[in-house]
Amino acid sequence: MKFLKKIAQTQLFKITSLNSISVVFKLCIGLITSKVIAIFIGPSGLALLGNFRNFVGSFETISTLGFQNGIVKYIAETKEKETELKQYVATVFISVFFVSVALSGLLFFMSDYWNEFVFGKNYIFGFVFKSFAFALPWYALSLVLVSIINGLGKFKNVIYITIIGNFIGLFVSVFLVYNYQTVGALQAIIITPSVLFLISFYYTNKEFPLFSFIRFEYFDFKIIKNLASYFLMALVSGVVGSIVYLAIRKNIIASIGIHQAGYWEAITRISSYYLLFVSTILTLYFLPKLTVAQNNLETKKVFWSFYKTIFPLFLIGVTILYFVRFLIVKILFTTEFLPVTTLFFWQLLGDVFKMASWILGYQFFAKKLTLAFIITELFSLIVTYFSSFFLMKIFGLEGVVMAYALAYFVYWVVLVVYFRRSLF
Image (cartoon, rainbow, N blue to C red; front, top):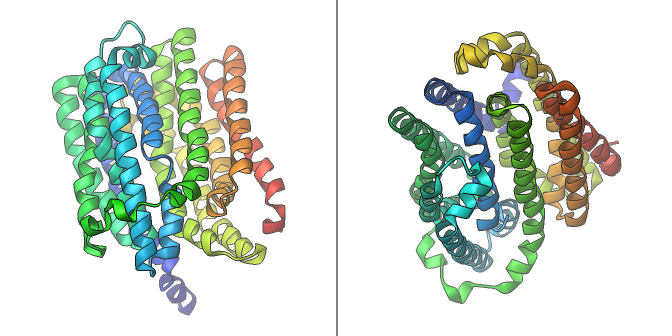
């Protein structure tokens, strides 16, 4: 009992418990949203949503300049130094604002081009990109503010923002999908994150007077230089990664049909729900710990803390998921999506290797190992891209998830070798 009480009093347990509540809310809301999407737009509509999500993700990365992990790191280091804190907040906020406004112009005036690039000539959704143009600055700034709150160590506030955002997303998605089907689902992807700006602004302003921090006199180009490496890393993972997955989905549509692409999007969506637990814990707890680790011994403790606590629970979770996969697909979607059950084994296996490698990969951000990150990430994306095309010709859609598992297994092995001194 004393042992359990001791665990319950640790910061990791408290954050994990609160985060678990957030994830449960997200899962319940995701269940409802997925069910509505499955009923009203089906596999083909889900495939189009996947394409648009990849596109939105790449613009999100460029608009925030990939600074999110860098913001967490530097805010954590300067939160007790008011002058430096003002410089970081002002520089990041002003930079992201002007970049996102410039990108909004590209979205608005090139909406027809983006429509053909993402959806092809058979769909006319140019107005969706114009809507995205107006939403992008608020979207980008909300991400910046959440990163600032995370860097300040206000983990609970980050989770509260996530919970509130999930509820907003539920009502917006259900209303728009019910009334406007595929168009409504596309608009919901845009609207919900931009509304989060007001919530994140409220929580940030509680910590310090935000408007008094955002002044041109505090702007410092040296900070942009320090954060440039994070932009390069995010450019590879966010932009190149999104383009690779967009290309894979478009190849699925062209080769074996849009319904098959919808099934792949469905298994990806299921995966994203349960991966939320680990990804948020990594960002909220382990990234700050890796950032302040001074040597290999301290880094080793952080790595093995993850492998001994979070990772075993994840293994148990995915094992259970595999055996109840038919039930999950019926609950989340409809019987039309039952072919998705054949994709579970390789998707879950890939997610296991993904989790095993994520904790190691966060060291790239914590210690600004830019070149190493870019090389390993590009290598992983290349393996994913070519293996998915090759294996799909042999095994059909199942070959795509086989490629996913293969890519993350190779990526994990590469990271284990690279960080062997910090692991063993």
